[in-house]
Length: 302
Image 1 (cartoon, rainbow, N blue to C red):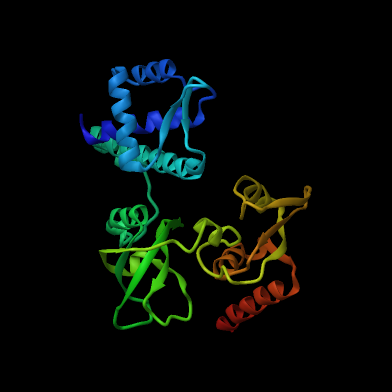
Image 2: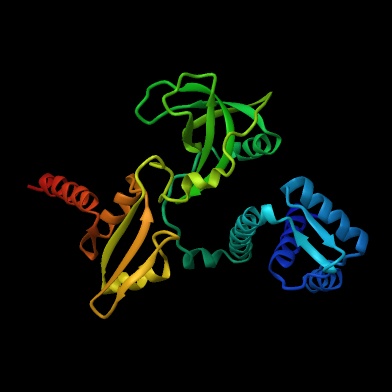
């Protein structure tokens, strides 16, 4: 079986068990057969074992419920993996259709974006996270001429606006910040080490829960109120700024929302990007920061 077909079968199994209200062995078999996979009971069991080993998703048969279940602690990870698979199939569909007709290339447009660097390290990083083994990274900041090396206990891979980042604990260093985020596009080398580590963060996702992007998790948590011009408001309702977003006012003239976040660089850049269609109402220091940034920009054109 080709690798893409194998991955597709894994995806169908994971998605079915995760989202179907009653994922019984009989229904799973029928679903796979509908998708063109001829499956015996033994083949399905082998696929579940491969999913467990390759993707660290534990799917078991619950004899009491008479259905398959996903381990509760892995549900969030499972949903993210399903999202990844869906993106992968969208790309595969696009490529296969382009291959069948060169004329279609004139009907598909991409945003120009530099090839993201560092994605070749994702496999090694995930293996290190899973096995709780440290890694040595060679990282170069944009402002530095030379790269520096760090020993890292890796905790989490995070994607933000098409770029990948790693959250880890810096070991054996007198760093001011014990936990740091590194962009994979600024990493030139990842070397897996044999040294094991004991995680000191129970849930690394919490580091990003109250922020937009990847920076500023030590900032103060604030309830930020923002007013949007009516046309922009429709977009904000369909694609919220943050999971904490609540609508305070919604009429023909404006949309007012509130988000509970730690204001950071990415937040300010996003608000400034809306131009005259967005206005921070409170807190006052956040509003003043936006005003000052706009004044600096205006001064460039004087």
